[in-house]
Length: 370
Image (cartoon, rainbow, N blue to C red; front, side, top):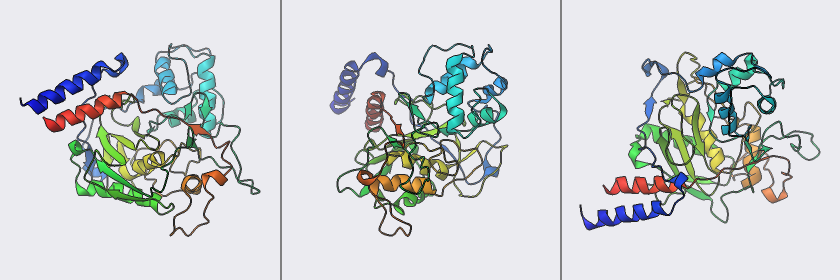
C-alpha cells in the first residue's frame, strides 16, 4: 500500500472520529441500478413491495389495536405527519389526526379512518421528501394557501424553508452522474430530457459535466442505507429524493425496475417505474420546489407503478417561475420573481443534508483511490 493511500485512510479515520456517533455508520456501496427498455423485458420477481403489509390494516379506525399499526405510524413519521417516535400498534388520537391531515393533502375525505381510498393512496410509490416539516404542511391541508391576485385561483406549489434558489447570476447548472453506477448513454439521455422540461419555462440551462466532484448537481443510484439519513426500502415504496438549493444531490433507488423507453406504461401487474417521471419530479426539488396537492402536477408526491407523468402542469410552472422568472423562449405568461410574489401561504418544506453524507463522500473517494 503506497503512502498516498495510507494518508487518505488516516484522513478518513480522523474525520470519522470528529463526527457524532449517529454519523459513524458507513453507507452501502453505490447501486448498479436495473434498467429495462419496456415492461415485457422485466423478469418475474417474487419481491414484495415495500408497503404491501399495510393491506391488512384496511378498515382500521380510532380505538383499534392491530399488528402493523406501528409500522404505519413509522410511515407517517417519515413524511412528517407524526412527530412522536415511540410507536405502538394502538390506533390513537395522534394517528387519527395524522390520517386526517394526510387525507386532506391527497384530496380524500378527511375521516381519520383507513378506508379503501386512503389505503390505496398510501400504498402508491412516492418521493421520499417529507410533506410536512416541523408541523408546517406544504399541501392542501394548509388553510393559508394563497390565491393569485384578483383571480381567486388557489395555488398549491410550495418552497423549501427560506425559499432557497440557485442565486446570483448563475443561470447554467452542471450535472454529473456517480461513476460507480456505470450508466449508459440511453439512461443519461432520459435525464437530459427531464432537465430540458424545466429549462423550457425558466432562464436556467443544464449541462452535463464529466467531473462529479465539481458538478452543481450530483446524481446517483443507491440501495437501502446510503449515508444521508434517508434509506431506500427496496422495490417500490420510496423511489427517490433530492435536496434543496444549493445542495444539488439527487438520489434514486437502485432496486427499482426503471423503464427508460418513454412509453405509456399502465401495467399494474408489474413493478415498473418510469424513470423520467421520477427524475422530472426530483429536479423540481433541486430547484427549490416542495410538494403540491394538484394531482396532475409533477410535484404531486406519489405516482403509481406503470404510470408516466412528465409534462409540467400550470402549478409546477407558476411555482418555479415564482423563484426564477420565465425563460426567454417561454410562450406562456411569465410570472413575477419571488420578491414580487405573494407566497406567504404557499407552504414551506424543509430538508437537511445529514452529516452522514460526509461519510458517503469519503467512502466514494476512498473507493476511487483503491
